[in-house]
Length: 177
Image (cartoon, rainbow, N blue to C red; front, side, top):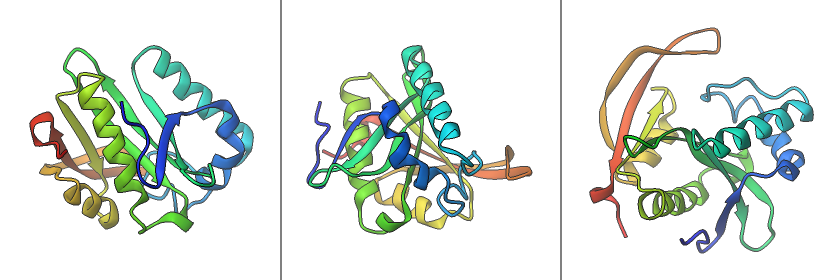
């Protein structure tokens, strides 16, 4: 599996990533559209990494660190918030530190993730659920050939209220090489 692109590489999320992830996961702007609160302490980040690694061991969710090829700096993470092995599908989630927004890093990282999921993990379908206001993420998904499937009304409890989400998907046969 190709886990290395031109500018980024993916590696499984590790406990040692907590220090570099803390500034990202504690930034209210970064987590604004995610189904999580900004981390208040590095201990909270370590706990989240522990939970994600535990879910990975059970094949229920997977998370990878996105690293800069040249500097080895952690730029963000991506992976599957949910993995349904029986139905060969997963729901993706991702975030980048603000200094890296709009530079194509996430598109490259997600292409690597799709390669891994379709070629090695046996995925047939990848889903993304996005808050309608998150226009950057919606634009990224469209650029990556995701298809819009509709709005799920008041679908997730987020930031103290129920939120609509837009459902997008990418099928194995639609994956670009």
